[in-house]
Image (tube, rainbow, N blue to C red):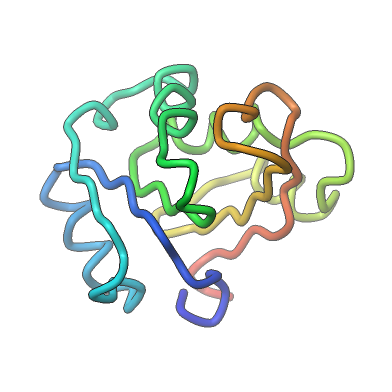
Length: 128
């Protein structure tokens, strides 16, 4: 994951034990990254996750959301719009396995995130 994820400013992570363990195992946590653990991610629908993303601090430009299916895969599909990597989108829609990483870019502020308002740049699965 450290080879495929950009440097992070902010992490939103489900407070569930398994997601906390997954986050710790990524090698992405550094002393300069703000981490918010929240139970709001657990069993959240894509729309609820989008509310969390759009509320992210505007100064934090790179965000990692660590959560659960079907919410996180649904959010990634919801955000992916024009200019997205077609192969990555097909793979994401086919299967979003545990510890997969969808790299998505949004122009503007987090508040601009919405249906089709982002580009899916890459989709990386653990076996890759």
